[in-house]
Length: 322
Image (cartoon, rainbow, N blue to C red; front, side):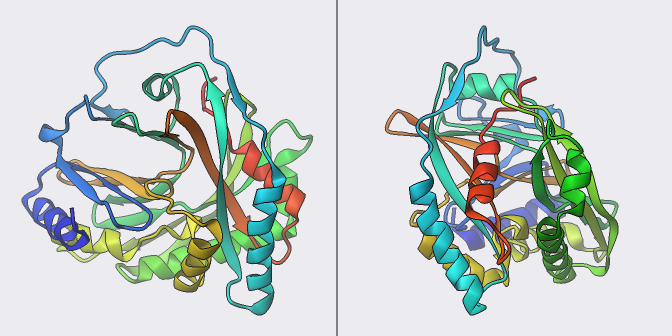
């Protein structure tokens, strides 16, 4: 579907209060939208906060998961290129992503059923996503965003205090909150931060993680339903997985990362005819030539340390199965 067709379709369905589901890739080259009544579970399974088309449950007897030889050398080249750009002043926050080959004894569909997350998608056995991150929610003429920036291993003593008092993490989070507030101001009025830097725990098969989020909200015009497509695309790509300033940073990341992200770090969402709930497609496993790759990333600033950033990248390679 062409991006303009996607926008017009969502605007039309929003005005008609037709329930729909959508996927938009990071580069916005392959957006898709389906009326809920037309989603084929043989091609796409979804579960958004318990709203799902998954009718059965597949049990995984034992679950083994490992990264195949994670190498810092490849990541280091990308990291140093971003640091050089930061030092030149081209960007002041860039969310650098990479991918690692993994081995696991479960299919992508089994991972969909076994994992626990706010947003889950299985698509044509090409990828599975189990994301904790909200992109935007629209309820009662108000739009909400919950940027998630800052991750630490929950088993570290005093982990919550450490992540909240870390100056680099604070600077990164403040930058992201400011970016998202500005983004929401493109489509909403009276935008404000209503909750700043709260900690959530994620339980995974590898380790438990603490992640830091904030809440930002604003007021939409009364005709917002017939502009849902325009609203969504105006906010893309999500600030939390790109950087600031957004356009210049996206250009940098495209050059440094060396491959399209595709649906990784794109957005998915569900409109029930009245309210919209959309997530950022992070925590992502894709299949390529019968091999599996886990894509993850993290924010880079001038205060970033190579080893710490690479460890954060590895910490995010997990499946949320308790």
